[in-house]
Image 1 (cartoon, rainbow, N blue to C red):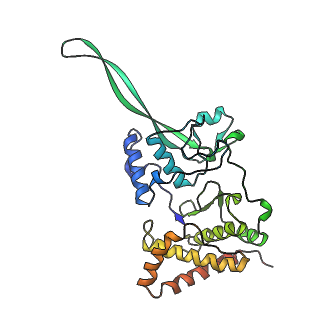
Image 2 (cartoon, one colour; image 1 turned 90 degrees about the vertical axis):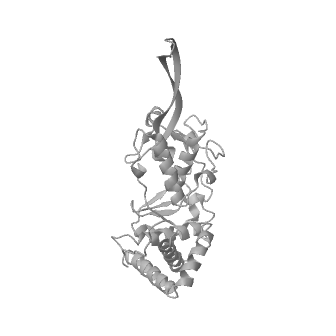
Length: 304
């Protein structure tokens, strides 16, 4: 899966208008096929099995903040449910990593103001308002106590496949492990994957990493593969996913990895059927691009 990075302040919304910022973010998620309220995560974590976003005190967020943080977790692939401010991280002995961007949440409150009514009497008027502040997911923070860490991985490190590990490492592709999302981020030019231990088998890990590494070859500094992708789920998107699917199959065959259907592949079948039905040459083109991608990756391997 490929994903383009989203701007931190969408559609011209202002810092002073949290209503617009949050509404525009949800609209952007919907445009990319993400319904934040139907994609909460359930993770094994030091805080226990949870599906709601939590504050640093492990108290759950509520209302609109739940939707905002669910959406951000889906967008960035965060598996941890805990969020905190920059200052809270410092007080806990942690530090937000350089370059990380926070997420805006809101706090509803009321302001009491003294006014004079039509009778000349002093009265109190209660005015509701939203106060915005920024939080960071614990996966963006280093040095926090153990209680904020995810549960230990299940798949042991001893299951790694040496040949596949060495081949993919030699490509030089930047891989960020963490969360529960597998994707290639075109703008950031990096691959996101869950940690090795989160996969059911080593073969699943390397097949998924191979799929995203084939996507990585599309960058303009590499094969500059542009199949016409404009928006999430369009025909160009389906064509690129087909190239990555075939490329992963070719790559797995090279590396002795069993390619098993990924959980998200069923979602692409309809798109692929549409593309292949409408263009009898599409599968040949996709196979050609896939082979070029694998050949490119093989060319990055050390000689001898």
